[in-house]
Image (cartoon, rainbow, N blue to C red; front, side, top):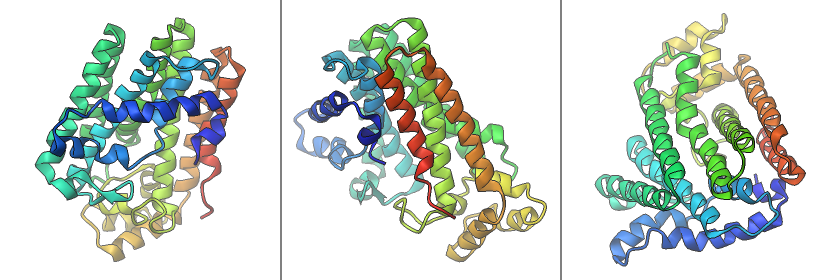
Length: 325
């Protein structure tokens, strides 16, 4: 997915190019070793979805982004990057964005400390933007932590509920997307109705984004996501298609016997095929469609037609490019 092709707001694309320099500069302190660690994933690239949501929400593509608009996007991207540093340590990941993960290159301790540094820089930038933004990012960090704890607490549990699942993805993924849109609304000084509408759109965007990722985890061709298909199954993270499959009267019992522990490649593929054999993926697509509808409704209060159309197209693209299975 190329987000700029769907958003169709050229000025936002230009603003994001300016943000790249600001993003790197925000973590460079003049210590060659620390700078190499903190900029490692920044220079590896990425879609910059969170800054895109922030800047687009602030400007609607009608004016150049102010420094405050850009810094709001930087603060959210730094929080996101910090979470990736920490996630990779927990997952013992070796690759991120087609380069060595920070923990693989520098070790777990450095990755954790560097993630903390990125989080601190995010908080400092937010503080400079005012109490509303600072408070928002503090609450977002709490949501991130809550989502991570929920995921860890239910790892390898075949009794994981849909409520557990949604709590985890709303915290780990949707909260940052929602806050990105809200930060843009705050730096632009939008009224409360637009601010709430954009925030709700961001939340729904994050939910669809994660549901899509979880669908791909069980139906994608190996390495399409940079990891083997069914990797969440192997690692005990039972996503929504799997939870639906566990309730299937035909394969649920067989799947339950396989799960509950770390899987080797053979059992991972066996479990993945069982999930695909059920209506779990179809039901998950339906759940994502529900959040898509909510997102469209949330944008109805946004007066700028270009931003409405761009955001609607952006979230629709998440479901349009799902491969056949």
